[in-house]
Image 1 (cartoon, one colour):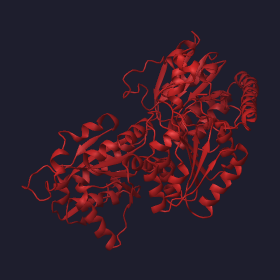
Image 2 (tube, rainbow, N blue to C red):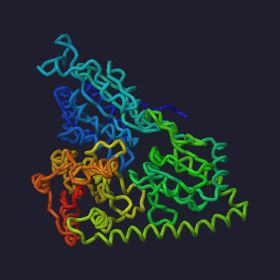
Image 3 (cartoon, rainbow, N blue to C red):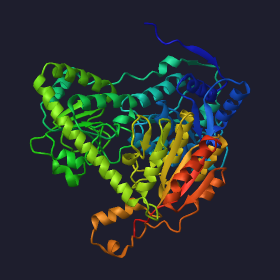
Image 4 (cartoon, rainbow, N blue to C red):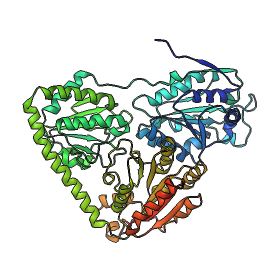
Length: 584
């Protein structure tokens, strides 16, 4: 088989060589950028590219780095293609750190590129020229992000860019995926050079991991010998191709699938009879076999002893030891290393072969199937009853907000969730892989709006809805997001669940001190977000359609008005929905 085909591209300096390498990667469509004094050579190279009408990644100006990283994150969610974030030296790296924490926790690949404050003091062209260049310089810029990236490197020779840039992308895309960091000193960007060698083929990542067949045969025997098995997952949907084989496995053996209540992906169709809801403890305590598929935290220490003494725990995960987590002590009897999208189909084949040979096993599976469907229907009915009970409450109940959003979601809708403590995923009725992405388990707020913009850029024929708490909306640096959406004509809908409080913090106080003074007096210092800003005005300042919604009966029509602005008028929209305050 012939090796990669290379082409020599004429360039003037390191900056042009770097852009040539980026543009050789067929997956890179955008550079989400917040530029600074270190980027002069890159900006000149981009201007030359634009003047010559050469094709290349489009630069998107984003006035805050957290938003820029979130946009790259959202673009990957909707497309499966890693993008590039370009930031300014030390300050830009620091501002983007929260977004990198989210990307690492969600296994999202991206190339996070920072300029490097000039090192030299006049000895080399492109060296220090501004007063900030002395105080801005750090001894080890990469140390800021090292714990949250898979790889970091500072360019030291432009001749190496042809190896460094493809290596960065391949590491980012290798399982488990994640962000990588590259810093570019201005001297080397400015340094003259004549050519750089590029090839689209060198960006191909390593193959995915399939669990050895012997391990899968053991797992198949354990699952088929179980009387009350359960599958528990959290992020199998991060790879949309893994959802169908998970559904097939559940179907084959009539196994209920329960999802972590804070699942950041669409993992299993809500209407499927094997969809068992989100109460992990309730299902695990009666199971004789628990199959953990792509889940990092299956339960909390308070419920760690819920397992039956004789229960067997299987695990499938690309990194079963979660090596980046300092302490992870959940019991596992048979841990399997493997990518779910390539491993589950093999496991299903083994299961199918054994089912075909055993009438007794098929009969026991069918008997279990009826019980699972009845439990599924009961769970759905209970949720519907809860929503019906609160739909007329004023201030508006968050369950009703989620229900109204579910009513406007169709097969061409992508929902980005950052409503934190407000129920969203369980209410939406998710059916399609890649239709829902929720907040990262790392917990750094300010992700949702930027992710929505990135998703819309990746899937322009889809409607994108960002669901935000009022606190997370403010963390999103909303002016930066609204500005970018207006500048690049990216229409999406933001719905704010505005409860005027940090409910996650407030609820923790109640959890730890159920009879405490804070609960008795409804006084939770440090959690009050009132008086609430008129968020709709912030959006309107950037050309958005926006309105405040106080009456639950008005919400369905308000959503239609917002979606009309998005779909028909091609502009962003925002609804500031006033919800009940949890402190009361």
